[in-house]
Image 1: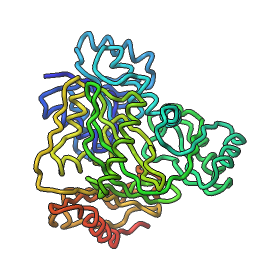
Image 2: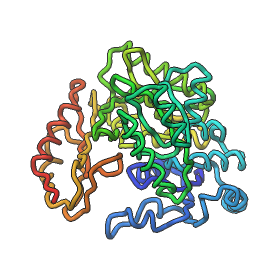
Image 3: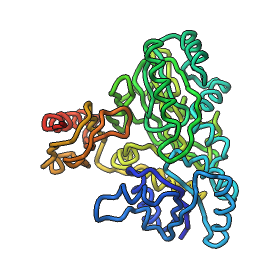
Image 4: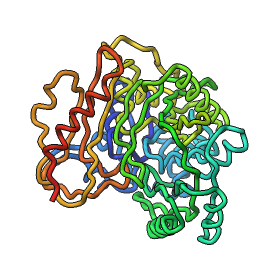
Length: 418
């Protein structure tokens, strides 16, 4: 039995999948957080959040890494940790620092910091010759506007240190760029109380479909688990509306995406102790790296993979954090593809009706999760405003996405927001 330190977490699916993977493999964990109420609020009424059922729950200022390191050292002397993890992007650099200080398995802190900072990722990959968009990083408005003219519109504006597509916008002219710049300036602190870096990343708008390459790195070797597709809506934002695994790609396109992701991970130094989710655009000029995320995929992509291949990436995440070889063997699950579609609100107001009765009993449906009437609804500007999701599988081929889209169309017909 191993003992893991879990430092913060997202409150979505991975906050449940990770504790499950730890327990199912016979391990225990201590949970470290600066705000217990953040997790208490996210649990359904009358239930306990799985993270708060840890062997130990300890409160500390996880945003102050210099104060946190000696405190974690003292905890390690008493509790004896065998590995340290987080599913939350905002704490991945801190976890890498902790692992390094305690001599525990994991990627190097610099590699993780470079992957988590979008501007640093761009510079590292550009220096290594890994293909990506033309880009510029600027802080002052005059410099940003000048760089935009040099790259040329349309462009994508990104914060360098936010997640879930927050404040990522397409801009077609200087007026739209100015509005995006002001919106970012008005959001100086992220949802976890961390002060943001005020620089802005500009990128050329890439054409073509987007996919993600899911990988597991252990002992210097990186293994590709597969390629997932992505659909996007909510323009001018980039809201993920659905995914399918495996992506319905020609073999040459899948291979090109995989090789580009492997080159990016190598350039960043993420070749040991990492489950990664690398986003790739398959442009008319070839594959281009969008982002490299040194943690398991979100939006329940890990569950799509498990349903199709039997590979549990949450369990692999635990294994590599403990310095153990992950089990990535495929098993026959009876499914050839699995897809998820998200119900994305286009207007703000109050949810009055959303009827999903009987949906769970339909053939091929794997999951249904829907918001309850009475919930306040915000028109989606990121991946944080979903009203629920539907997941379905196909035993014969790549038909799962079409199945999910049909189910979502039925849900939308009964959706009432006022």
